[in-house]
Every structure is written in C-alpha cells, then in structure tokens.
Amino acid sequence: MITVVIGAADQSVAYELQAALAEMDGIEVQFVVDSTPELAAAVLRLDPDVVLVHDQLGPEPALQTVRDLSLRRPACAQLLVTGSADTNQFSMAMDAGARGVVAFPPAYEDLRVRIAAAGEWAHQMRRILAAPAEGGGMPGGPGRARVISFTGSKGGVGTTTVATHLALDVLRNLPGHRVCLVDLDLEKGDVSGILEVRHRTSVADVAKVSQDLSAQAVGDAVVLHESGLGLLLAPVDVRDIEAVDPQSLREVFAVLRHQYDLIVVDAGSHVTPAQAAAVELADEVVMLVTPDVLALRGLRRTITQWENLGVRKESDVHVLVNRVSRQSSVSIETIRQLTRAPILSAGLPAMFRRLEPVINSRAPLELRDDVWWRALRVVGQEVQVVPGGGTAETPPRRDGRRRSRRRGEDAGQATLEVVGILPALLVVLVVLWQLALVGMTAIWSGHAASAAARAVSVGQDPTAAALGEMPGSMAGDLSVHTSGDAVTVSLRVPVAAPGLASFPGGIETTRTVVMEP
Image (cartoon, rainbow, N blue to C red; front, top):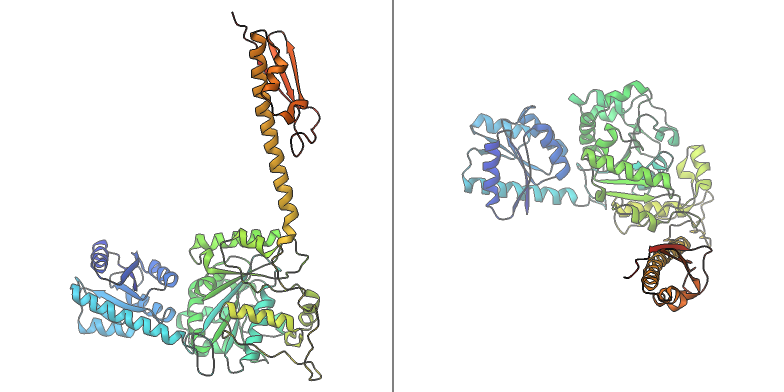
C-alpha cells in the first residue's frame, strides 16, 4: 500500500488528483490540504510515502516547502504537480529535493507510473534507514538518528534523571555510538546540573540562526561531556527562550539526525511550543509518571493538550511508571485502567536514597546499583533505544570485583498490586449491595401499603394483607398503622441480607383508603 498526501490550493486540482488516485489499486489518499503550513503538519504527523505538491500552493513557495520536507522526512517521496512541466521547472524541483514532476492535468497511466515509482523509492529508503548500522548499531543508522523524547506528567517525577542516565548507559555499552542529549526544559533545565557541565552556548544559539543553519553551527553549540555524550543544553538567560520556536527546532533536529545515531530529549513537564515540537518530531515519546493522583491528573491533562494541538495521539505515547514499590498506593494496573496509552512493563524502582548521592555529586556513572541500570536497559529495549536482546555487563565495583547479587535486591521492582485494591473493591461491592436492599425495601413497603389499603376498603385485616406481599424473612420487620382514611406501612431495611439484622427505624409508605360502595 502506497500512502499519499495531496497539497493543492485549487480545489479542482485537488479533486482531479484525488479522483484519479482513487481508481488505482494499492494507493490510499490519507489527507488533502490547501496550504503549505497544513501540508507540513500533515506530512510530519502521517509520514506518508508520497506527497503531491501543487506548484501554486501557498502562502509559502511550494519549492521551499519541498526543500523543508525533504530535510524533515528524507524517506518521503515528493512529486511537484505543475501546469508547465518544462526543463527549467524540472531542474528547480530536483534541486529542491523532489523525486519528479507531474504534469497537470495528468494522464492516468503517467500518474500511476510516477506514483508507483515514488512509492517504491520511499519503501526502499525506509528499509535502508531502518536497517541496523554496521557493528550492531542502532535502528536508524547514520543520517537518520532515532529521537526519543522524555516528558514528565508533572515536575519532580524524574524526567531529567531518567533521560540523562539512559543516554549515558547507552553510550557506556555502545562505545562507538554517537549519542546527543538535548535539554528542552528551557526554563528549568537541569541536565547541566546533573552532569556538572559549564556552557556558554545553548539550543537558543542555534535556534537564532536556524534560517541559515549548518552542521558546523550545531556542532559548535554542542558541549562534549567527558563520557563522550554530546549535550545541547538549555539557555542560561531566560530571555533567549523566545528564540526557540517549533520552526527552528525542526531545522536543528534535521541537522542532529545526520550527526548522531541517537538523540535523547528532556522535554520537561510543561506543554510549551518547544515541547510540542519535540513530541511531534520524536520517533518515540515516553511520559514519566509516579504512582500518585497528581501525576495521573497531569498525565491526562498533558495528553489531552497534545491531542488538541495535533502533535501526538494518546495511543502513540509510552507511559513509564517511576518510583514503584510495594508500598505504592496506586498500582500499575490502576494506571493502566486510567489511560489508553501503552504502559511500559519495565517500571522503575523507588530508590531515591541510592540515587541521591550520585545526583548530589553530579556523577551518575558512579552509581553501582545494577537494579537501576537493568531497569533502564529494559526501558530502552521496549522503546527501541538499544538493540533488542542485548544485555550489558554489570558495572564493576571500584576495587574491580563484580557486585554480587543480593537476595531481595529487586524489592522495589514494579508489580501488579492486585491484592492491594481488593479491600477497596470489596467495600464498593458491599455498599452497592446495601443500596440495592434499600431500594427493594422501598418497593416491598409500597406493595404492602397498597395491599393493606385495599383490605381496609373491603373490611378485611390490613396487617394480614400486607404480610401477604412480603417475603417470609421480612415479616418480622413490618408494622401496619391505620388512621382514618389512610394506612401507613413501616418496613425496616435489612443489614446484608433479609432476616439477619435490620437498621433502626424504617421506610414508611402511606396509602389512602378508597372505601368500596
């Protein structure tokens, strides 16, 4: 199946292209747009195989849009639709990055051949870019780095710690890998604090020159950590934040994808234009939550805002539960019921006291607890950060010996605490059952009062008539009172089951007696 997005401001052009493609087997038109901004958003969101761009599409020049999309989606084949398919037009389209030119109005067979060729090229490019690099490298290979964005449902859930430690661990276990950590928590970026890095350049500096961005400019802004990790850090001066907008970030990430094998992004916990761009551009998005109500509310709120902005659907977000322990009041199973987003099976253990020394000393690699690193590697495998099936060696102690595995070392690992919710579930069931008994008591009381009123009207015993409408186990809880032309029946509500016990008082029902002539 070849997927196609059409960009044409003229509705007649769009209709004719869509109608022609609808008659072709194996071709699906995903979206039709009438402006260049909408076309860019649709291509980035849907990642089609082929894009048809009408040369009259605006407001930005169509060839400029082709050039931009070729940088952001290198495996997407673009065809320029034009009414003047001369040599000059063809040459300009090729220079911009298009795969060919389609004359309008198109001949059916010519359009079919060009779409098929463009689709085959796109599929082949995807296979090449998805193939592992030589030497067991990452999916994506050179020229197509994998981008993983980590976000937090609220502040303090450990987003920066997890993103930084995972990037360092990948680099430690794949020494030849090129890894870059980008800090897009622009207002409160803490990556430089965790790694004790001083910097004068930041992501804002490259954003300011994004209109004429070069690999050299990005390379000069990246700070090289002693571990070999590349760092593109948040600006020190809060006034520089305004320079970091979605358009500039797209240009920056397009260059970074060609320079690195893996890009890890700390996108912070606040929904900003920069965070939205990082979420939209990422191959995988991981939302960190902690097992508490505030974090779960933040998860729901953030994903709703992303969906409203059209940058990421809930089903395309991975949820990672951090600080899980057997004492957690909210289980992973409970979180799973509150969101449609897939929950990563590798929850991270609650081990802040063991992480605190290395965070304060700004030396993450000094942490020798293998439980933490193993959990991070499982997370990496689930989101395809590290090669599937690979296992890293246990970090050695400072004296060179392997750390022995202690019994109970994984006490903080995430488990499905079903037993923990059983008491609350039982309480809910008991309350519902008791409410049902209250309702049934009210119904029986009404039936008994009506029977007693009829009995009085014909000169019979009202108590006997009322008892005749009652279950035998409820007879002892019934009382009948006659006053003038009215009959009142009082029936006590049973506790747990009829005949066992009753609440004091009762449900009273009064019926008017209509005397028979």
